[in-house]
Amino acid sequence: MSDNGANGNGAANGANGNGNGRSLLSLVPKADEKQTMKDFKTDQEVRWCPGCGDYAVLAAVQSFLPELGLRRENITFVSGIGCSSRFPYYMNTYGFHSIHGRAPAIATGLATSRPDLSVWVVTGDGDALSIGGNHLIHALRRNVNLKILLFNNRIYGLTKGQYSPTSELGKITKSTPMGSLDAPFNPLSLAIGAEGTFVARTIDSDRKHLQSVLREAAQHRGTALVEIYQNCNIFNDNAFEPLKDASVRDDVTVRLEHGEPMVFGADRSKGLRRDASGSFEVVNVADVGTAEIAVHDAHNPDPSAAFALSRLDQPAFEHTPIGVFRSVDRPSYDELMRAQLEDAVESEGKGDLAALLGSGDTWRID
Image 1 (cartoon, rainbow, N blue to C red):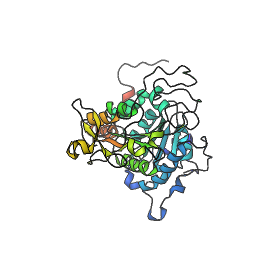
Image 2 (image 1 turned 90 degrees about the vertical axis):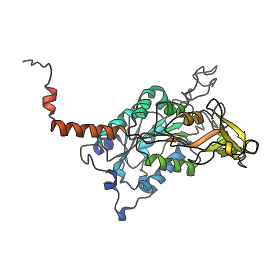
Image 3 (image 1 turned 180 degrees about the vertical axis):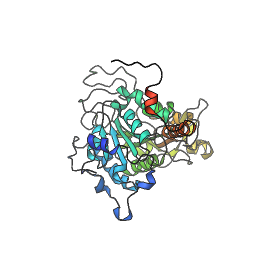
Image 4 (image 1 turned 45 degrees about the vertical axis):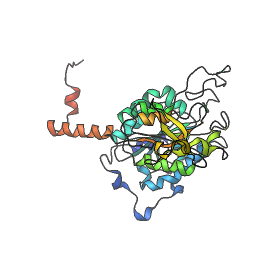
């Protein structure tokens, strides 16, 4: 592996035919090759604006990856276009800085052809939900074995402050001087609606929580989407301030734990109760009793509760759940594809590409 495996050539070389079919477990470092955060840093200058939330996410990912116990050449980061998409340059793994919105499509090809790789997609709210929206929803519904980190700063940062698909209604920016007329996407609602099997949310500045969510995403077989609230201090500073202000964050943040009652608040006095419409309402625990408080079930195959939870962060982060909203088992696309190919070989023998290309109506031009 080159000193900086995070360039386009590195990705191409890392994805050639060797190793196809090998399991990740057979590619772990030897005992004397224990990796640290330093092993995942490149010699490239990290070039984001000072104070950008991307720095915190980068450090959290670099310090978390050694836990996977995988060789660096068996980890790949694929990105699209945007500030977040510079991520592969700073990871001493293989990587691919691809084109606008198409990272999930490129990563799908890589994950399905190379089961020995751990494939991660890094994207932003503009890259993933505007030009890339179609690719994102199809990766989710197919359940390709990808880990998608969606940095959501609710603005276009790379192109200097235009409104994005997650900007709030009425957002005043350079491209909407009278206020945005577009209703924003809710990334988690979109992912759950697309039948995503693992959907989670975390915050750039909460490193412990961010890494705990990354661990669960890494263990999931299939598409794992993690929305990361990420501050753009230049063009949309303090967009998530209620969740970061120490004086109020415990009263507005609902920390989801599978199998636990959904209570929150600095004194744990508030809770979530499912109402007759299927939505969640905030109640005082003392008024309704603990029996009325809903217990979080991330493994419920019915996505309706997870969807209802995803709606709580609006309009102004008054009650914002973070953590794993949904984590269910469903065969991954790549597993199903490999089984189908194996069945075809068993029933029809070794494939003949030349015969396939020459089948049907053909003609020769002399």
